[in-house]
Length: 251
Ligand code: NDP
Image (cartoon, rainbow, N blue to C red):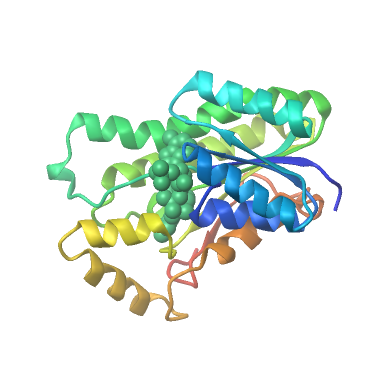
C-alpha cells in the first residue's frame, strides 16, 4: 500500500501497539503517540527494526496543547497525517452508584474528549487534501452496555455517534470515519480491571465463556479490522460501527 502517515493514540501497548504494527506492515509510516513516552519510542524503534518508518511521540489526549504538539512533530518527521486512529482509552470497573463526578470527568476526558481533540487537530488537513481515514476505537460497551462500566459505556456511545456525524460532514472531501468496537480483549487495561476489582477475574472468565468462539480477543484481532478500514480498499465504507468480539454481540 502507499506510504501514508498514520497516527495511533495510545499506541505504546495493548490494542494500539498491535494497530501500529499492522499499519506499519501495510507500509504506512506510523507515529506511536502515547503518554508512556519511553514505551512509545521503543515501539517505534521496533517498527523501524522491522523495516518501517516510525516515530514515538509524547501525547496526552486530555491536553489540547500536547495533542497539537504531537500532530506537529508527526507531520514534521513523517509527513501529513492521512490516517488517524483514536485508540487511547481508560476505565475502571465500578458500579455507577460508587462513582463520583471527578471519575466521570476523567472517563469522559480520556475516552470521548480525547477523540475530539485529536480529530479537531487532524481533520482539517485531511479534508483540505481530499483523502483521509479516521478510525475510532469504541467498545461493545458503547453499543450494548457493560456491567460496572456505565460512564465508560456512555463515553464510548458518544464516540460512536460522533464518528457517524463527522463521517457525514466530511464524506465529500474524501475522508471516511468508522468505529471499531472491541469486545473483551487481552491487554493490560483488561488485566488491570480484572485484578483491581473483587469479582473482576470471575467476570472475565464468564465473559470468555459467553463468547461464541470461546476466547477473549487478541489485540491483533482488532488491529486487522482497523488496518482494513484505514486502507484504500475501504473507501466506500463510512459511518459504520464494527464489533470485533468473536460474536459476543451481534447486530
Ligand atoms: P491499554 O491500557 O492496554 O493501552 C492503552 C494505551 O493508551 C496505554 O499505553 C495508555 O497509557 C494510553 N493512554 C491512556 N490514557 C492516555 C492519554 N490520556 N493520552 C494518550 N495515551 C493514553 O488499553 P487497551 O489496549 O485495552 O485499549 C485500547 C482501546 O480499546 C481503548 O480505547 C479501550 O477503551 C478500547 N477497548 C478495550 C477493550 C479491552 O477489553 N481491552 C474492550 C473494548 C474497548 P497508560 O497505560 O499510562 O494508561
